[in-house]
Image (cartoon, rainbow, N blue to C red):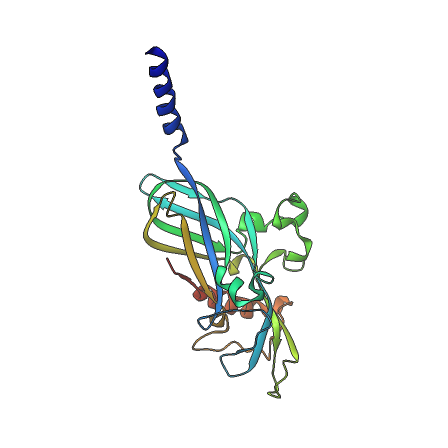
Length: 246
């Protein structure tokens, strides 16, 4: 009897010990263009009618946070999300690209937030200040003249003369503390082992503006300190491209 009692006691304790108090939340970003999955090298229409295709889109993601009544979880550092290879086909584009927020306490959260770019305290540093395991250690993702990391990259080719050939390369980059985008969604997010995904849509067409169209012919590449107004315009537009799916 004692052995049987001990066996059931161990079994019950084991069941409680296997119960997870925290889970990993997947924040899935899906890149689209005018409501369609964006596929690299596929032709799309610029807001003014020009033909355009993309060969890169990436951004630094930081300050991912879930907050609720007495519970909260936030990420540290900044991680690059690069859709260039992920969005090579429509099927892979529909799968999106996920960021994992680890050790999230199960429960109901009332706010989800994140930033696109590198927070000021980290942006004040250089790639050499970070270890090789950090995306911020990549030298090519830093603007030395700006003393800033490149927060987002949108690159490709556009047909400026309307002859049917996308002849002009564009590289629209954002960076600098003023270009940091922080977004939040006030909603109820119930996190459990079964419900642990948040989906965010990014409609890249909105990067180019809706009422005022970005002048890509005048500023196809962002490299100069004199282009701060264009960087701010692109950052403001990019903020409108993100929307909560669920």
